[in-house]
Every structure is written in C-alpha cells, then in structure tokens.
Length: 298
Image (cartoon, rainbow, N blue to C red):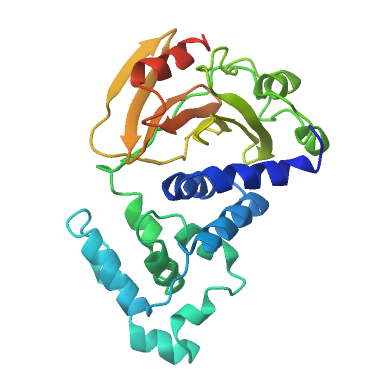
C-alpha cells in the first residue's frame, strides 16, 4: 500500500457510504477511547458537509427544544441543563451558530456524531450542555461492555508494544498488521462472503495503544467493517442499537452479542486487550452469514 493512498481510498469509501453509515463511522471515531484521528474525522465531516447534512443554522434554544422533544421520556436528568439563550447571547454577543468553526474542534466533532439531530446537537453542545453525559445513560439504546480483567501477556509490565507510525501506513491486510505487532488474541476473518473485497486497512493510535481497522466493499458500495480497538481495564466503546439484542452466542470462550441499528447489523465482543466489532448493512447479509465470519476467526 502506498503511503499517500490511504486518504484518497478512505475518501472513496466515505463517498460510497449512506448517510447513516457515514454518521455511524463518525460516531465510532469519536466515542473510542483516546486521541481523535482528526484527519479521518475531517474527511468524514467534509463529506457530510458536501451532502448538506451537517449545517446547523438555528439558535441554541431552538436546537435544544428539538433535541428534548426527540428524546423525551428516554432520560430524565438532562432537562434542567437546557441552555439559556439570553445568557449565551450576553456572553458571545452573536448568535450561537456563528461559533461552530471556533477552535474547540473536539466539541464540534463530538456533537456532529449524533444521528438524526446532528445540526441541533452541534449548537447545543457548543452552549455547554452535557449532551454526551446524558446519552451515555440511555441504556435502552446503547450497548457497551463493563470492566474486564487482563489475563494475557500482550502488555508486559504495563507497557504495550512500541508503535511504528511509518509501518502503520504500509500494511496491505489486517492480518499482516496484527502479525507485525505480535497480536494473537484476535485474528483477521479467514472467510468473507463472496462479493466483498478488501478496500482499506488502517492502523492508528487510539490513546491506549492501537486500533486496527479493515474495510471490505461489494459492488453496491456496501461496507463490511472490522474493528479491533485496544483498551485497558474498561472498554469505552458505545454502540447504538434498536431494541433488544438480537442474539448472543458463545464459542471458544468468547461471548458474541449481535444487535441492529437502523440499517446496520453489528456483532461485538471483547478479548483481554481488544474491544472488537464487525458491522455490515442488514440487507448485505443475514445473521447466519455474519456468524460464519465470526466462526472463521476461531
């Protein structure tokens, strides 16, 4: 893989994604533990702006009212945090939406990740409302893992393997990247359904150590995404889901959880050092086929 090909390939994949897939990818980037990959996030935001799905133009009060109405009844302890429009105006001297390009990049990016109310939440978060603190408590709609115990030796004396940033740009397969770093507790899928071909491999620091990503696409442009995100003690990824888990099953000592979110189906599991997931559009394959991918990694 050429060092300068990652960005153009990633941009191509982002252009092929549906609005929902694009927003879910942005959510995965920003809700993962550690430092944000600003380059990837900015490419996603640029594509969202090109499509006109990321253009907040309302006051903070209007945005909050829409946010509260949409999620009414799902959480009770954010209602007293609604922004005071007069106070915001007194501080800024300008309408709140004119500050959406200020240097507080992380707040803007975090607000941009919420599906359905992206425009509203960009403004609300800029007003100082703890939107994300509230969302984390929506247990009916979010899936996450609890604290785990470290039992294997990838981390020695509290130290992860040294990161080679240059080499990270050169991997041509997910398994090649895992082998380079001596990772054995997770492996790349040994079986991928017919019609899907490898499109991108990315290895990037995540604040704890590394996140390993692989993308496969079919002729319709649908994306099968594989993610192994390193963590320490407590996995911090949150997955939005629609209703209850579809299925849980265990094999070789690993418990897999399968759930859906609008147009995507996701399987998630953890190992001693990685939080893992595979996500694919629901109309691209059924649950049995998704399970075949998981079983191929045993």
